[in-house]
Image 1 (cartoon, rainbow, N blue to C red):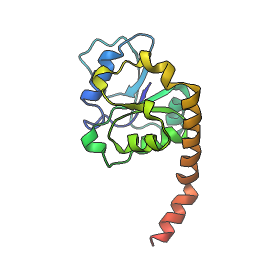
Image 2: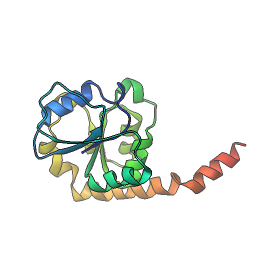
Image 3: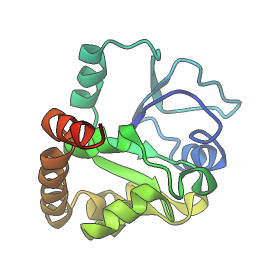
Length: 165
């Protein structure tokens, strides 16, 4: 699992803590910010990274992981986008997000509702893995990746930038 980004309250909060409590098992590796500290006895193998990752090392982590978890606060991300979400989708990584956020609305456009966590207090990852990683979902994610890569790229950025000058 990859919990990317800076260790901020709007990203690592009750949703995050509840997820950890319910999914505290030795067979799940977690890549997480070096600033992560928790009083919970963690069974998961923790692999820490700093915010100062080189682009190359950042993508090395993405190569190793199977799942990105973004337990972001609804109030903070209802209309706010996430660069990490865009990167994860562009790299064809299954990404779990909070319901009623900008990211969940994006996933709904591609009928990827199984990646949307409605209740972090009761979400058991192991029980949902088979459904989350289904062939049907992988095909939908691939379509989303293609769409994202056709829009979220340098050429489109330059085009949009030039239009607004």
